[in-house]
Image (tube, rainbow, N blue to C red; front, side, top):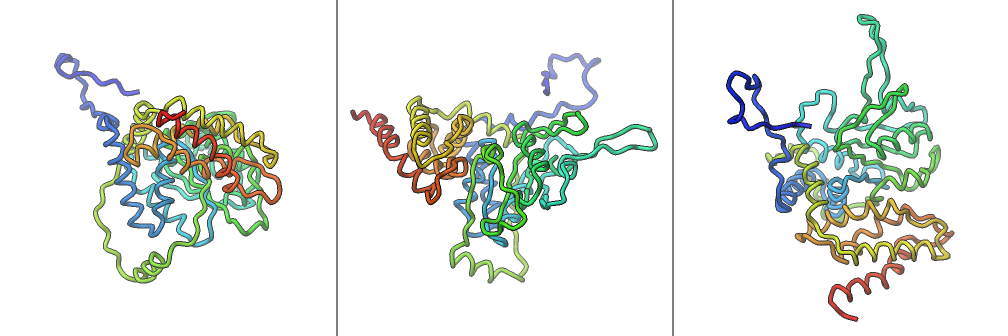
Amino acid sequence: MTIETDPTLVPAAVAPAAPVIPSAPKGISTLDDVRSVAGRLRDRMREQVMGRDDIIELVLVALFADGHVLLEDYPGSGKTTLAKSLGHSIIDDLHHDDIADFRRVQFTPDLLPSDVTGVMIFDTATNNFTFRRGPLFAYVVLVDEINRTSPKVQSALLEAMAEKQVTVDNTTHRLDELFFVLATQNPLDAVGTYPLPMAQLDRFLFKLSMKHIDRASELEVLRAWGTPRVSRDLPKVLRGDVVACRKLVRETVAVDARVQECLVDVARLLRADKRVRQGISTRCLVQAIPALQTLAVLRGRDFVSSEDLETLAPVLFAHRLELAPGVVAPALISEILKAPIERLSRQTLGLP
């Protein structure tokens, strides 16, 4: 924690030798500041990834809601470019030489937990063991083909996602507060994969499907390929600003009690439905609140509305449900949402 001291109150004889540098979060004070930070990230990501505006918006919602994203996509759909464009848009304002802005980890069946968390190395010069940090020590981590590695590695990742820490040789090492995971899996190839357990799926705020981009965007990609791309000098954002935006959104955006009641009603209806073998958890409802708040901010409001819940419900709930054979999650969620959303809308308008 940084304690700032007014230099006018410190005698010259005891003044610190190094100047006190104000922390980055000081510049984030209004929701307009949050929208400005999100806008800069969105512009940089759009410049690198074409035809993915809806996915970019949801990734930004997850980032500011302090969640993680599971992308179920086809090979060559731009997932690495998407993650890189986000990671390389964030500046390290803490000057951590051992924490990268972006890291990519390819999960394979022979991967070990130490390959992602880090490992203890014996230093012959000092006769001591030192900890060498793994790729999880980054602001944005792309975990490619998460379901191709063993449950042991998935468990190590689960600890990192849940607690923002890793444990190596009974010693806990904290990850950065910004730590954000984008994980991918192939929707068609099931050979040599390990299905993710429900406990790990529940740690992902959203599960997004990256379908093929539209015709115009695909043509634009082909036209631009092989030619030098003129990159605009778009401003980056400070790591501290993103963290400050998270806190400001939690404290500022209003969540009416009726919205909370609507969330609980939807959860209870899903759990009671005979087509649902396992419903959504209370953790999911808790994680939904900052996501709804963030979407409200990005859409120009300082309060959560029923529109936010309708927009996010499919990507919030679908991957957390275990359904009977033949049941389609989006259709079921849409059906269950109707009555609670209508009741919430009528209450908001003051109707009986």
